[in-house]
Image (cartoon, rainbow, N blue to C red; front, side, top):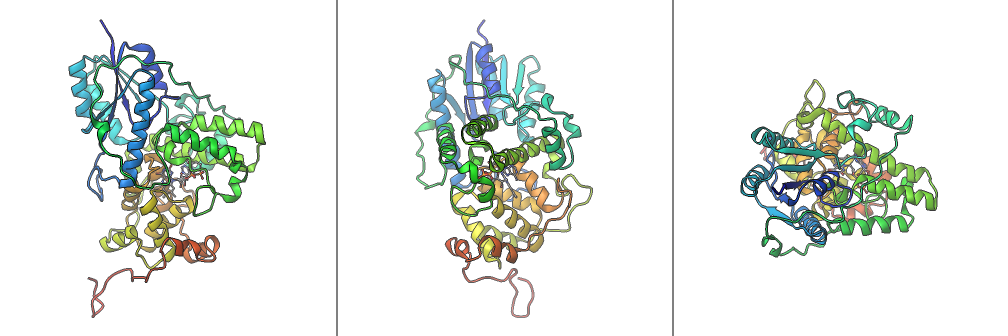
Length: 435
Ligand SMILES: Cc1cc2nc3c(=O)[nH]c(=O)nc-3n(C[C@H](O)[C@H](O)[C@H](O)COP(=O)(O)OP(=O)(O)OC[C@H]3O[C@@H](n4cnc5c(N)ncnc54)[C@H](O)[C@@H]3O)c2cc1C
């Protein structure tokens, strides 16, 4: 009897260095490659489920088109379902008599819930979930996940001394088992023409990374990385890393090639350093599970912040009393991307100046950022809100001082329209009562 497998793509939109796909290629005779265009609502959600910004949606669609093309070259195609993965997978299991399921390990609670439910419901099937989003596997790490160090510095020291070797990426399979569904008409939809900074997909990722290293930008990364505007001051690898169009291991391999060719430096090391931050937040999310989304984070005490609809709206729309924040939010809203400095400042403003519940800020980022990554986003927000992995526990940026350092001539603020007539934080009536 033919063995039929199903591969559920999530944040691993590539055929290269995809351990679970490589395993499926070896184990089954027929394969369905599935992606579900669906996103979950979360408690405290500030937006309707499925409400990705148009730029994020476009980036996702471009990534899927590219993945479909890569699969076609291996004799496959991508089956897209606009329905919750649990429903889509259950239906496909029944119709196609599937015996093996494959996917990449995910830290999202929703993806884990779906996988867990499937395992319970279809105990007789073979379930295979392998790591593809991290540099290391749990068994490589010098500690159990539950004993993950409580700060990034301790984590990095444990990884670096003695130096843990980063495993090499896997090659793409030469071919894939034949599909057992026919291509649908999903691909006939129009791709909108938003002029995004980034084009989705593994092909675009490969070109961008090659170009980044060919232009020797890696040798000045440490000096430029705190920039606010443009494509060159930091690597801009994050959008493709986030949805898995490229693996972190493939990037490290290219970084090492670059060091062999052009010389290692503080700057090249610093790129790895930042990738280790990413790695830390991935294991942090694995360790803490749903506490990633809790108001009190991984701490015992909830912050004293609250929710004020008007302040939240003003922050989202870039109409706060802080020009630098408005400029960052305008940049985020029109490009789907924000520099690391920008993210730190708008998050600090959100929590400390506007006194807002940090989870609403994290949710807004989830909707807007084309490099949205569940672990990096929620882990960084917790950190900034003082309920996460920051040993100092409280990090409030002086916005005026930061603007002076990073935008001394006000060019960035002007460029992104942050200097429009400023509005008061809260609306009041003639008798000074809040409206
Ligand atoms: C509040 C807040 C929310 C964030 N949300 C996300 C998110 O959803 N997705 C995301 O990828 N990054 C997030 N970051 C981290 C960081 O801002 C971005 O990874 C970075 O700005 C992406 O640009 P780049 O690729 O040019 O980064 P570079 O500076 O070139 O860094 C190289 C790579 O290292 C990783 N990296 C760098 N800094 C961090 C960091 N602080 N945490 C985790 N990984 C890091 C990224 O994968 C990045 O691509 C967030 C930071 C903050 C403060």
